[in-house]
Amino acid sequence: MKEHEGFWVFIEQIEGKISEVGLELLSKARELADQKGTYTAAILLGDFSKEDAKKLTHYGADKVFLFSDERLNRYCCLAYSRLITPLVEREKPEALFMGATPLGADLAPRVAAQLETGLSAHCVDLRLGEDGILEQIVPGFGGTMMAVIICPEKRPQMATVMPGVFKKSESHKKGEVIEEEVTLSGEDFIPEAVEYRTKKQKTVPLEGANVVVCGGYGMENEENWKLLEELASVLGGAVGATRPAVDEGWAPEEVMIGQSGKIVRPKLYIGAGISGVMHHVVGIQDSDIIVVINKDPGAQFFEVCDFGVVGDAEKILPALIEKLKERFSS
Amino acid sequence: MPNVVVCVKPIPDPRHWDRLFLDPETGVLKRAGIPPALNPLDKNALEVALQLKERFGWEVTVVSMAPPDTTKALREALAMGADRVYLASDKALAGADTLATAYTLAQLIRKKASPFHLVICGNISLDGSTSQVPAQIAHYLGIPHITHATHVETEDGQLFTITMNIKKGELVFRCTTPFLLAVTKDVNLPRLVNVMGIIAAETKPLEVIDARELELDLDKVGLKGSPTRVRGLFIPEIKRRREILTGEPEEVAEELLNKLHEAGVL
Ligand SMILES: Cc1cc2nc3c(=O)[nH]c(=O)nc-3n(C[C@H](O)[C@H](O)[C@H](O)COP(=O)(O)OP(=O)(O)OC[C@H]3O[C@@H](n4cnc5c(N)ncnc54)[C@H](O)[C@@H]3O)c2cc1C
Ligand SMILES: Nc1ncnc2c1ncn2[C@@H]1O[C@H](COP(=O)(O)O)[C@@H](O)[C@H]1O
Image 1 (cartoon, rainbow over the protein chains, first blue to last red):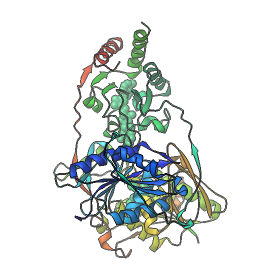
Image 2 (image 1 turned 180 degrees about the vertical axis):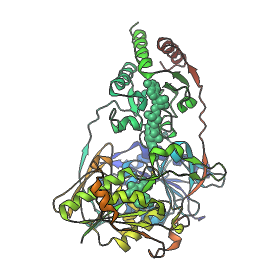
Image 3 (image 1 turned 90 degrees about the vertical axis):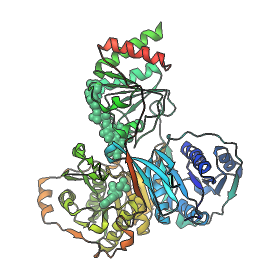
Image 4 (image 1 turned 135 degrees about the vertical axis):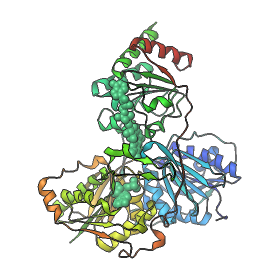
C-alpha cells in the first residue's frame, strides 16, 4: 500500500468544454497533496492539444495525463474506463476524484469496480485523517448527520464530489503534460453516443448568483411561489427550491438545492417555508448571510441562520418586496 | 423465454423516516419497526420492463438483495405485473457497500435470471443514494450501461435509443441488447397496483436464496467484501448569528432589511 501516491482528478468535459468541477477538484487535490508532500495529476480525455492540457497545470496539476482523440470528445463509459483504469493501475495514485455530476456518477462506479476499490458518492468535503487516510464527508442517514467514509485498504481511494463545494484557485507551480496512447477499437464505443443536445436555460442560473431566494414545501402553493420570484427579481437574484417544492411542480428540477441538487454560495440566501434538513442545508451552508423565514419557531433551519424571521411567508414576503421597492426607488 | 431483469430495492418507507434514529452508543442506524417500501425509481424501472413485456412478450424477473422481512414489499412488484422475484437474503450479505451489493446482485442475475436482454435499475435509491450500484452490476455482468435515462425507445426490442440527462444537456445513445439501463423519474409514470394484480401476485413465485446457493465468493460480499467503511458520524456545527426576529410582517420586514444593510449584503 505504501507505493500508492498522489492525488488525481478526472477532468470532465462536455463536447470539448471543460466543466468547472474538475478545476475545483484539482485545487482541492493540490491542497491535500501539499499537506501530504506528494503530487497531483489530472486525467484529460478528448480532442485536446498539449497546450490545452497545459492549462490544467495553472489549477494545480503537477502532471496532466492526456488522451488526445477526437472520438473521446463525446462521453462513452466503456472507452473512458478502458483508458483510465489501466493508467491508474500503472501509476498507482492514492486517490482519484471525479465530479458528482451525471457523467462522473456514470463513470466513477465502473472504474471503481474495475479497480475493485471503494467509492463514496456525493461528497461535500474531503480531508486527511490523522493517520493520513482520506476522510470523505457524505451527508447521510435521513439528512441529519454527516458520515465520514474511508477506504482503509484498497487503493486508490475514490470519491465523487458535488460541484461547487470547493473553490478553484490558480497555482503557480509548473507541471508537465504526459501524452498517453489511445488504443481503442470500435467495440469500446458501446453504447454509441449519437447526439448531444444542449438544453435551453429557462431560469436565472443559480450558479454565480449573488442572491438566492429559495422556497420549500411551506410555500404551500403556486400563487405563493410567485412571491419568491418577485423577491428574487427585485434583488436581482435567482430562485432555488427544496426537493418537495420541485416534486410539487412549483420549480424545475434544475434549481433544486442540496445534496442531490446544486450547491450555492451566494452573498445572501433567503429560505422561506423550509424546515432546514441537512440534505438542503449542505447546499447553502457556505452562503455569506443566511436568512430563514418559517412560521414554526421551532424549525430546525433557525439553528443555522444569521437572521430568522418567525412568521407566515405569505405575509412576510409581500412586506419585504414592498419595503425593498420603496428603498430602491428612493 | 427472453428475460428482462429489474433490480428492485426495498427501503424503509420514507413516510416514516421521522422514526429513524441513531443509536448513540453504537452509531448504528435503527430502523425500528419501519415497514419496507419499494424504492420509488425502481417502480419506474419496472414500468419500462412491463411495457417491453406487453410489446414483446418478455418475462419480467425482479432481483433484490435485502433482509427476508421485505418480501411483503416485493409482492407489490408482482402485483404490478412482474412474473417472479428472486431475493438474495443471508446474514453473510449484511453491511454490503455498493461494490459488494453489485457483485451479489450480478451473481444472482447470472444464476437465476439469465439469459437476459436487459437489466433495468432505478438511477438512485432514496436511502443508499449513491447511484453507484447499477454501473457496478453492469461491470460484473460484463455488459455496457447507460444511467440517468429519461427516454427509452425501441422498434424491435434489440436496438435501443436512450436519452441520458447530463443536466447541461442530453446525450443520446444507441445500444443493442444486452445492456444495463438506470432510469430517472422522467422516463414514465409507473402503473398503480389493482385488485386483480394483488390476487395474481399471491400465487407468483417469490424465492429467497441464500449465499451458498448463489455460490458467492464470501470474501466479496457483505461487510467483508466492502472496501469502504464508516469511520464516524457527526452533526455538523455551523456557527451563525442566529438573530431571531418576531413581530408584525411590516415591522420584521423593516428590521430585517436594516440588519441586511448593516451586514453589507443589500
Ligand atoms: C437522499 C436524499 C437526498 C435529498 N436531497 C435533497 C436535496 O438535495 N435538496 C432538498 O431540498 N431536499 C433533499 N432531500 C429531501 C430532504 O430530506 C427534505 O425532505 C427537504 O429538504 C424538506 O423540504 P422542505 O423544507 O421544503 O419541506 P418540509 O420539511 O415539509 O418543511 C416545510 C417547512 O415550511 C414551514 N412552513 C409551512 N407553512 C409555512 C408558511 N406559510 N410560512 C412559513 N413557513 C411555513 C414549516 O414549518 C416547515 O418547517 C433529500 C432527501 C433524501 C432522502
Ligand atoms: N440491495 C439492492 N437490491 C436490488 N437492487 C438494488 C439494491 N441496491 C441498489 N439497487 C439498484 O440500484 C439502483 C441505485 O441504487 P443506489 O446505488 O443505492 O443509489 C436502485 O434503484 C436499484 O435498482
